[in-house]
Image 1 (cartoon, helix red, strand yellow):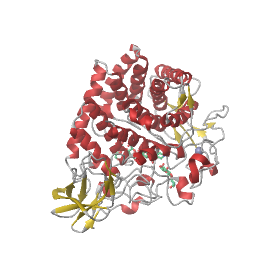
Image 2 (tube, protein in one colour):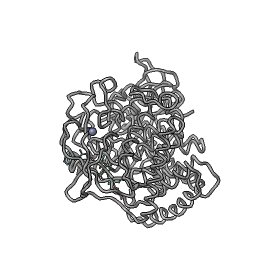
Image 3 (spheres, protein in one colour):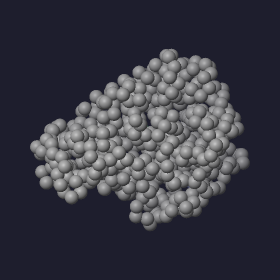
Image 4 (tube, helix red, strand yellow):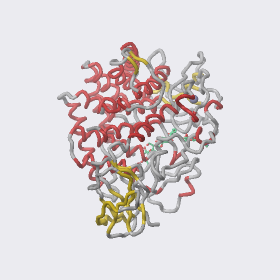
Amino acid sequence: MKKVFVNQVGFLSSAPKKAVLNFAASEFEVIDENGKKVFGGEVEHFGTDEISGEDTYVADFSALTEKGKYKVVADGNESVSFEVSDNVYDKLMKDICKCFYYLRCGDALTKEFAGEYYHEPCHMSKATVYGEDVEPVDVTGGWHDAGDYGRYSTAGAVAVAHLLYGVRFFKGLLDVHYDIPKVSGDNGNLPEILAEVKVELDFLMKMQRENGSVWHKVTTFNHAPFVMPEDDKEELFLFAVSALATADIAAVFALAYTIYKDYDKAYADKLMEKSLLAYKWLKENPDELLFFNPEGSNTGQYDEAEDLSNRFWAACALYEATSDGKYYSDALELKAKVEEFDKNAQKKGYQGNVFTCLGWAEVAGLGSLSLLLKREDNALCTLARTSFLSEADRLVKVSGENGFGLCMLAKDFIWGSNMELLKYMMVLSVAYKLDSKDEYKKALEAGLDYVLGCNSMDVSYVTGNGEKAYMNPHLRPTAVDDIEQPWPGLVSGGPNVGLQDERAQSLRGQGLPPMKCYLDHIDCYSLNEITIYWNSPLVFALSGLLEE
Ligand code: G3I
Ligand code: 9MR
Ligand code: ZN
């Protein structure tokens, strides 16, 4: 079918603007709401690429800067309508931040703020420590991870990290205002994003044992059926501690300390105390301690191949927060181990530079972010800088290999491919801050275009944002709440050549190109689930893109 793919939300006036056509045309027009031609140009043939499988043609209308609502038309085929304006992403930004509120677990939702998406308090019972004969523990609160009701320490820490590094790098995030309950600090209310993140930090504190180690997750033994959260009454278990969770928490509490100390000193001190306790445990337990589900249990495993990048992140974050040289020495030692592991890894879950990996599994790049904030003239800060710049150069090169200008290789289209892209967009936004090269910004903007509809599925991967936004996330409340529209602002996992779930398997054997391995179906957890750490990198990247 002939299609004109475009960012369905729209463009900032000063941004590059393009539509991608999957059919041959020589010219195109941009029309306004009255059908009047406001721009005309020639279409450029790109050719066929590996990721979309389409023979693409590009219509560039960057020169159109006037505010308005438009469509692109070529050979009688129209795109959906989109806007050009300087506040075109305001609603998107609020929506993607507000989703964390809807995902709150426990008794934190109110009708005033959740409206029709309100649900009763959920998962309020104490959790059994799996395999141990000890008192059950109160770990209420935090955010549901995703379409399931699990709460996982590493996933939570990484989502929080994206949001908090976003605050550190791009101040605009503190000025995003949206409706959630107020939380007061030492000098008035916390900015919304910090009030929201505090919900997860409070929960993560409860996941820490007295000895400093951190339980990997709290979930039921198996995933709940499709019910509202308050109807998921099965026993909750705290599964084993891992060095992964302990290190991630040490890191993210140190990062949080640096931010919250300006708003609530006592709270920040508590975060630092717990970070140090976790770090002490890591030092006393230097042997690898990974995580695997006990037999028969099938909630998220969040298994990682190593705990070195996590320990590296913890050391970097504590160095940044305290300036104590002992963390620098630890980080230097761990850096060598991360490099060694990277060199010998048989199968990598990532492309490019390991020191730019931003989670949920490999997290050395989060350590780099702390080093970049430290901005010292030493070996590790230099490594962080050169890693981000060289990775951004790689991404720019990749973005030249397809008509969408997308910095993705075929290998990137795994489960949660949109997160792979959003992490690359984080890298590009940081690189742009280090060295304001147009090509970094352009690749970043092309990434956003893809997420919002300029892709060969012709779909916006953010609910409620774009005329053809996907509608059927794999998300339990949405599946059973009888409300047609899902919460706006949810990022879908996106195309995945693995096609792992049963419904997705119907797409197998058709030789679909990576970008088309997608179905907007509620059953498709391997293609169309949502998670906290798929929303969080978009918050970071969009903040970066909006930074002056
Ligand atoms: O590391 C391998 C790499 O070696 C390989 O080349 C590549 C291609 O297959 O895959 C890489 O592994 C992928 C892994 O994620 C790490 O990125 C797997 O294919 C992929 O199946 C795996 O997907 C994860 C999925 O759980 C299954 O474990 C997703 O990233 C992760 O987001 C998802 O998380 C679930 C939770 O378990 C439960 N809650 C919902 C959440 C989202 O679906
Ligand atoms: O709904 C679950 C989703 O959140 C997870 O990502 C996925 C993989 O762990 O599992 C989903 O649950 C399915 C379960 O694994 C198998 N039976 C069907 C469940 C829901 O479709
Ligand atoms: Zn809950």
